[in-house]
Length: 336
Image 1: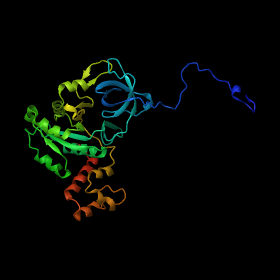
Image 2 (image 1 turned 135 degrees about the vertical axis):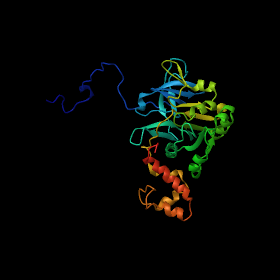
Image 3 (image 1 turned 60 degrees about the horizontal axis):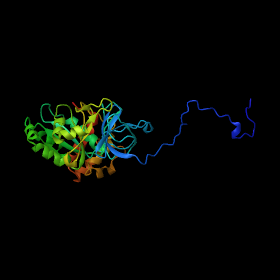
Image 4 (image 1 turned 180 degrees about the vertical axis):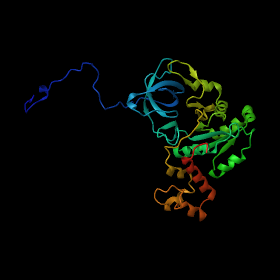
């Protein structure tokens, strides 16, 4: 049965009352043009510590961001109570575009990628020369993730008092990766810290490595205790500090010389998210030789044009070997 006539107007339409008295929903989101800009220092169960105007502010993600999550290193826009006082909580309303992203998956079969840190300039891969034994495949995987995410790699080899670095460095000599070799004695007297600092000044550097290699010990030597306390994570619910590396945290180097991001020790570094075709970008001397490669070339097959390119003398054969070794890490387990 027809409820209204042919010529209805607004007065003929019945309006249902809004019993809840709340505001009508809308797709128009506020722009928050007056939001303060800050850098995410820690993330813990939905609570984030953001550095704004040289002091930490505790915040949570605004609902309007949906599934997009902020990670350590992100530049974010924050509104609300920016005092950083106890029991205050601001809102992150915008995440700025990232310049780099370090990602990993639990293993090569896991499609769920985890963003470890954003906007870092350099990835310091920390490995011990002994106790525990070095794992070259793990290093290779970290290098692939660095190249894929737009980070410059750095090798930090610890415990040189237990084993010489020559054999391990020989594996990576053709990659032209900067490195620093340290010993326990050098960490104690500060000479190792000075050499590492030279590689970090003016940069945001993420430190990764599996448990026991001395990563957190090195970070603690680089960043004074008072600065770790000032910018270390504080639980927004309990107010208690957390100074063990159970989650990533960004720490400032003395004299505003840069940032160190200490990350939890990892047992594996999955590369499910990495497209092997992007790894070639880390080899500018080889990349021109791919112009004659067949479509979707893996650069590790008989038809690959890089073999002829190298044979003609355009690049060092050792560089091609290094590229293919890194590409092969996608198909291997770290312990292989």
